[in-house]
Structure formats: C-alpha cells, structure tokens
Length: 201
Image (tube, rainbow, N blue to C red; front, side, top):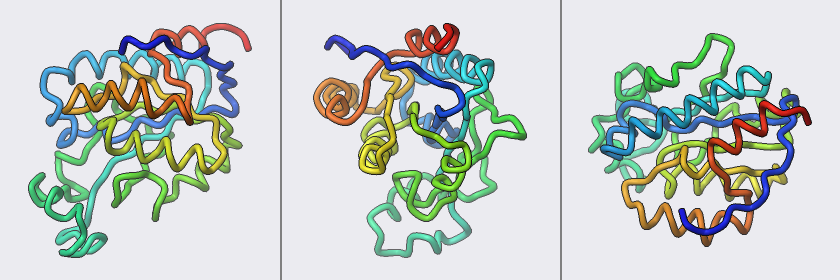
C-alpha cells in the first residue's frame, strides 16, 4: 500500500473487538506465499489485543454435509463445492494453528461471505459493548469488504489492518485499501495497532 494512512483513533480495550476472519486452512491456502508473513503480522496483533484485554472473535466459514445453508442455486455453492464442501469438522475449515483461538474466545461460524447474517456475532459484540471493530482477514475482496460495509452501516467505528489482510489478487487488495475502505473505515497497519494497544488511552 502506497497511499498515506489515516491517523489511528484511540483503541479502548473495553469497547474494541478484533475480528480475525477466515484465517482457516482451506481459505488461506489460496493466497500462496503471502500466508506465512500474514500469519506473523496477525499473530502480533492477536498477542497485543489479548494482553490489553480487548475482545477477540474468530470467524470461519463452514457448512453441514450437503450445504443445506446454501442450496444448489446459491452463487456460493459452486465455490464451496470446489473447496471440498467446507464441512464443519473438516481440516479445511479449522483456524490455522498460528492463530489458534483460546477456549474463552468465541468462534463464529458463518454461511455467507460476511459474518453478520444468520450468526451470533451481533449479540456477542453487543454483550461486550463494542464500539470499535478492528478487522483482519482473508480475503480482502470477500469477508473484509462485506464486513466493512455492514459494520459501517451498523454504526461501528471500523479499523482495517491493511497488512493483516490479503487477497489472491494484490491489485484488488490495493484498490480496496486505498480507494474504497477509507470512505467508511480507518486503514492502518499492524505495527500501528500494536503500538496503540501498548500505550495508555
């Protein structure tokens, strides 16, 4: 990303929740060589969020046998079938080991691109009195884009961690981060988030 980044607002741990989205084996395998460095940056943010006492929620996409949540005619059905069905208990749908959730950290299972529709994410965020959402995930043009749009419309303050998101198409990633997301979110980098969490607010 070459465009200048907007100033990062204070991140108050009690009202900030970090969403780690689709960091699962079958999804991250599609971004190739980007994965290892991506996991390292996401892990640094995860460690800082945990240490600060901020909310941490993981999101994964998975389906029952036969994908009854989609139906044969849904546009996602062909993609899910190509990825082996993404069954709930399959290795492909589990969170990568580098970002393994703790027992106390919710894992939201979604059946669409975005994490809000038909899931328990909203009550989890409400219970934490969440005002700010910090987004990390794969892919930028998929779950990250959908979440930015929904969260902004729902009046959350939205922060996107640019170098802890990735897309199979780097140019799509760049355009979204530089041209689209700044209209509804603050786009920043992992080191800025870690620094914000380790200084008093």
